[in-house]
Length: 141
Image (cartoon, rainbow, N blue to C red; front, side):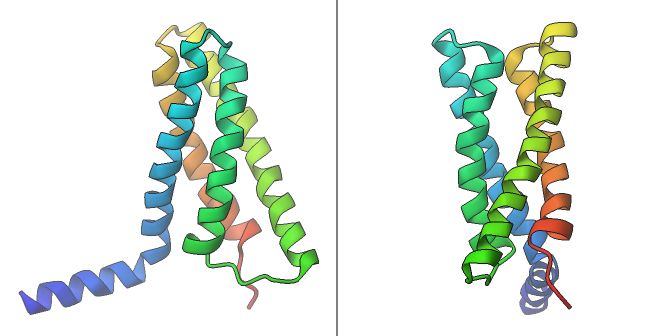
C-alpha cells in the first residue's frame, strides 16, 4: 500500500501541470456551460450567448491558469501586460474556432446547442493548453 501511494505521488508530481490544467479546465468548462445556457434560456441568440460565456470563462481561466497551473511569477507591469494580452489574443482565436464548431454542429448538423457547446469546449481546452504551455506561460530557459 505504501509503495502504491509513493507511485501515485510520483505520477502526480510528474504530471502535475496537466492534471491541474484538466481540473481547472473542467471547472472552466462548467463555468462556460452555465454562462452559455442561462442566456439561451432567456432567448438570447446562440452567438451572443457564446460571447457572454467566453468572457466569463476567459476571466476565470486567466486567473486559475496564471496562479495554479502554470505558476507565473511575472510581476513587472510590462511582463504581466504581455501575458494578459497574449492570453486574451489566444482566447479570441479559440473563441472563433469554438463559434465555428457550434454553428456547424448546432445550425448545420442540428445536433443541439448544448452538445455543440460541449464539442466546442473540448476543442478549445486542448488548443488553449497548447497555446498556454508553449506561448503564453512558457518558461524561459
